[in-house]
Amino acid sequence: MAEVITVDFARPVPLFVLPAVVLLPHSRQRLHVFEPRYRQMVEQCVAQGRGQILRSGQIALAVVEPRAIVDGAWPEPAPLRDAVCVGQIVQHERLGDGRHTIMLHGVCRATIESIAEPNDDRLYREAMLQPIELPGRAFPSMHSARRAIREVMSGPRLRRMNSIRALLEWWTRDDLPTHAMVEIVGDAIVRNECERYRLLAEPDPWIRAVILRDHLVGLDRLVAAADRQHADEWPKGMSWN
Image (tube, rainbow, N blue to C red):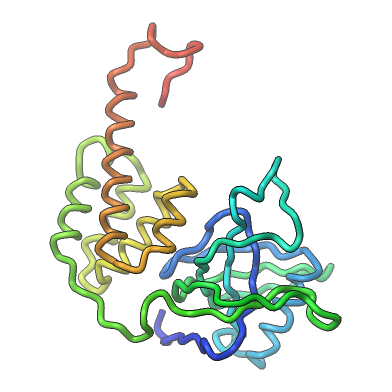
């Protein structure tokens, strides 16, 4: 983004609670907001911007502790995992019935230090956060990690995937640092929630690159296994493809 967005960790940040990780730094996520508590949250955040969307309040997307989810439901207040992604509202549409559609841009990863539960005036939870990575830190160039990930993505099997081919075009851009590309590719490719949370909670960009490369290697092996199947071996007559 053209404008540098910072997070004031001296102030509490609203918590938008979800059952799974949907946002990583440098990625974007569209959300349809309909619950009264989150409608209030968005309205108050947008009002802080006084008409300038990038000046609006920020929202931390928090993840429900998996053990608390039973048949898709969880108790209130939901127990939360420590890591969150702080997002900036970059698009906002107010719908006629009080709902909102927003686009969040992932700004940074953080951990929850303390939570303030809703009160008479505030319907949603908010939390004091600590950054997982120091604000303004200089990231390493990570040339070797960039080469290793690009090598896997460029293989003959993964290149057949439309999503991989599109991401490879981004991977050649010199203006996008490796640590940011790991976030973008991870958001687009990693769907397993355990691995997405590992990417979110991991403070070391080198380890995040390893997590992404290992996931791509596993995806490549899965495609290779599907290629080796014959029609008479399909389980219940259905190909893995």
